[in-house]
Image (cartoon, rainbow over all chains, first blue to last red; front, side):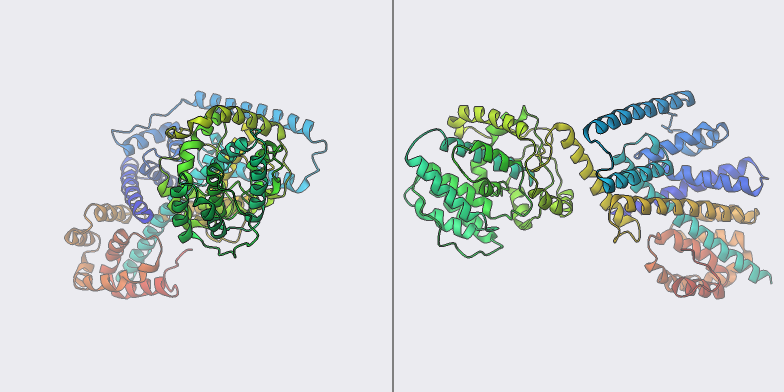
Length: 196
Length: 434
């Protein structure tokens, strides 16, 4: 079942990616290489996220982030088609405010916890190993949050779930791109052989 | 599935103990002593359904009320006995009291499950509750894991659900995590038979075995902890006692409909306030997810512990992202001539018409006119040869890869061979990135 869904996802991804690339190429003819790379990557990312059809948080976050840029917006809208339900959930300002709120709440919570802990257990180093372990885990979850798109506003549990899904989709993306690159290289080689 | 056991472990026992402690002097007292002896001999063995059944069957002969239950018990439990334990010849003769026999039947069901690491708060409850009856805490501690065998189900329907109702007010939650499962078979059959008896227990079977394995060590560890929250438990006990008193006559009441929320029972020796319970549920969810992730991320089987796992996950995600960047850069270096577009054309055509060979050839023709002449005949051949090496490559969609590669192979057979040999054995021209 997993392979079935992944192949379906893969096909969707390819379709959307090609569509996006076509839109890209039709707009501008001469871009420098970095720009092209960016466009390619962007198209790939958006295609991947939209192939998910709003089922996962990270895809939604990725698309809404991509929409923030005005120049990408047209591309994205075109890519997602007329039935694009991806209205940016909030405007930029709202998102910033939301983040701030979330962060301040977290800070409050943390301070409360710390106070309680200090009251309960005298020296925090009594259980040194566990304390260190917890810190390590915390630090790593922070890093993971930064990696997974939209991970800042996820609790630990959903973060892991999203990371799981994100890994799967990234794998598909890498696979498809790699086959394309390989095929392209084959074409190039054959071309050079023919022309030699 | 397993969680129900705890509930049932606590409640019928409590009720039965209540009956014992109702202050009826004389025969009941002796009964309890004998009963405690029975227990203490019964439960040090990990599972002693054989002995218990044999013991209960003899006194049952006098009682007509409970014989169907016992017979049922015997039939159900005997096939399920995994651990054969020699019968203890020292088991006392049990008086033919109907209520007592019923209770004994209930307790005998407990024996068919392993008690390793599954002791929980019930022990404390029973210990506190039965202070008056001097039932040993050690033995009752082992009674907590009830196998919800069908015989027990009958009792549960009568007895358990009243108690469950009473406990709702205390906001108890069933513990999803159980210790080691000795009888997984039994467990699954039980869960089939007890659909109506579930308390809105939302667990799927999948997370349960995983949790069991993961937490068996934890449970075993908690066995040795002392009870910490007597206060909470005594409160709960008092409440159940009140309810018990009122409900002894309602034994024939039909079972309550299953509740809607997840019940978790606190493990022995751990805090029981709602915060920590919720937190524990959360933690277990997280650990379950981590295990799933373990299967996904390569080289993660030997790693244990959250921090290391997270480390691996982060590395993997970072590497995948970097690969995407690199590949997109590589694609950008594609000669920005028709090839880029034709590549896309190929792919789009491929997807739209997977089986349409003519269209494929037409696109190839557009791309490399002279190659078609070479390729059209040989195109059929490479397909069979070259799909094979790709079978072992994981995750490749056969269709698109095949058709993409067909394009490439239409041109030049020599190139084809090298490409696929590369895929198969060593990379010669093609660098297969890993």
